Length: 320
Ligand code: MN
Image (tube, rainbow, N blue to C red; front, side, top):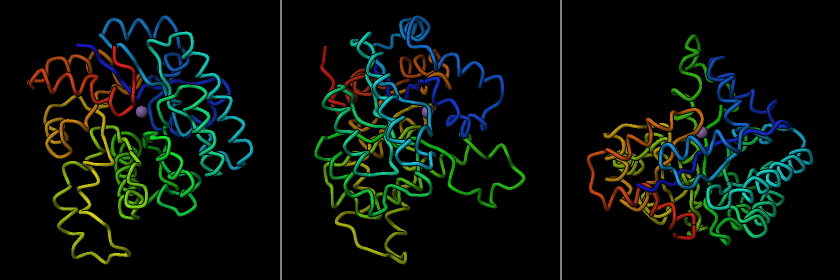
C-alpha cells in the first residue's frame, strides 16, 4: 500500500556539530551508518523508499540542530540556511519529498516568521521542534507568538525527542536509559503534557502537535491522567478533560515502533484519524517498519488511513 512517512531525517555539513549532542546517545557503528544515510538526498534514500513502497517523505533535520545554539542570531541564520537547503532538495523531487521547517526557537517571533516563510514560500508541511530550547519548553508564555502563528497557518508541529536540559539523578549509573531507549520518551511525553496542562490548546484551539514513537507512551496513560488530574494540585483549569486534547490537537506517528499492541492502543485511544505511519529513517530499518504496517492484522480501511490518508489530511498534502 502507498505510504507517506514523516519522521524521516537528514543532515547538512554545517550542522553536524549540533547533532553530536544526540548522536552521542547511539553507538559508533550506527553513528557512521546514520551520518552517511542522513547526508544523502538522492539515490540511496530514494532506493530505500522505492524498495519499501514509500511514496512520499516529509524530511526533517536530525535534532537538536540550532536549538542548542546560544546565539539567537546564529540560530536564525543557520536555520534559514538549512531550510533553504532542504527546499532545494524538495524542488528536485517534488513528488517524493516534503519538508518540516527547522526553527530558531531562541527568538519565538523570528521562529514564527521563519515558519511562515517555510510554509508560504518554500511549500513545507509544518515544523519539527526538537524538545526544549536552552531549557525553555513550548508551554512557556514566551512562545505565545509562535503558537498564534502556527495555528493561523494550520502548521502541524512535530515534537521530536531530545535530551533534557539537565541530567536527572534517576539515570545515574545507567547510560542505557539515556537517549532513544528511555529518557527521550520520558522527556517528550512530559513536554507534551506541559503543553496540554498550560492550556495552549484552549488558547489556540487550531494548534496541532504530532508526537512520534506511537505517542511516547501517552495513549496508554490517558485514563489515569484524567483520573489523577482531578485530585492533583492544579495551577490552572482546562476547558476539557486532558485526554480530549489528544483526540483534537495531538496526532501520533508509528515512528520507531513496529509493534501491534501499541498501534492498537494508539488507534483505540486517539481515534483512527490521529495515527500516521512513519519510519524514523535512517535510525530505524525501513523494511521492518513497512513490513509491519503492510501486514498488521487490521482492516484495509484503517490501513489506508494509517499509511497515507491521515497524513494527507493533517499535512494538507495534494492527494494523487
Ligand atoms: Mn527521529
